[in-house]
Image (cartoon, rainbow, N blue to C red):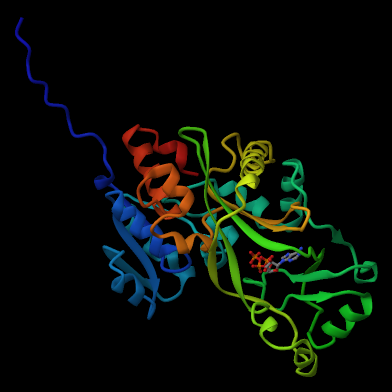
Length: 352
Ligand code: ATP
């Protein structure tokens, strides 16, 4: 029998696509990870901000816009290059939740989850459905009977948050601020340590991974302890939580099983949320928690995308090292998911 050499057409590969993101937040690791997985990389920068993306050699191409909300002016160009857009924490803040729905290029992740993530009340509903313990929310300042953290909507990075122990303390503090138009939430202040848990869920393999952990470095909350309590009082320092950076952590190992269960429940319940669709949340997400001395996890927020706390792990975390035995940032993990989807002809399943 004569056998012929059959020349197959080259399979669809990362080289046929590009990965694009906005130049901010976690773009360095997203682009670096995409390059490592064989993609061309495109960074959309605002004028005057491209230097890090050039200097760190992560962007094959830089597209400049005046401001991030002008993103749509480069969308056609991105489409021409077969680019998959990777959203990150700053993406929604800069583009706006409504505008994000208008993105027509390939977009990694479930956009419909935004309605749940960006609304504090809906977020609580989702976390409650997943059976996660949350700090209590008090209805009005008169209800303050324990320490509460006062959080302003859209504060971005905890700027201006403060602690009040009584209704009087609340009103004394806000006297200095124009409150009329400011929406806020009064949340029970949990005395414990913050722990941000970075997950990745693959819809292709149904695997939930713990990528890494971080805590935040916040000004001035993380510096107040450097001066004596008396000096703090004398200087009338008011605590604020303006995020400036992130620090890597590893967690007590016996707590890990519980964290896998929490993450899994978040994924499963997301499929039941109205308007989200049966795929639910996938890709990277983060549970923002405080652990009290009894080792209870209080989840005070969920981020349904890559968070900046993954930035210390460009070269991987202790956990991704265990899982992959090669450098694996969350940015690279996203690119790998896109790569596998392309290779298996399942790209549709990771776009949303
Ligand atoms: P967002 O991610 O919506 O921008 P944010 O970054 O502005 O939120 P948070 O992350 O909600 O702000 O909180 C800022 C800081 O306050 C963090 O250090 C967090 O650990 C701390 N914090 C938040 N909620 C609580 C709470 N209920 N008890 C104790 N500490 C809290």
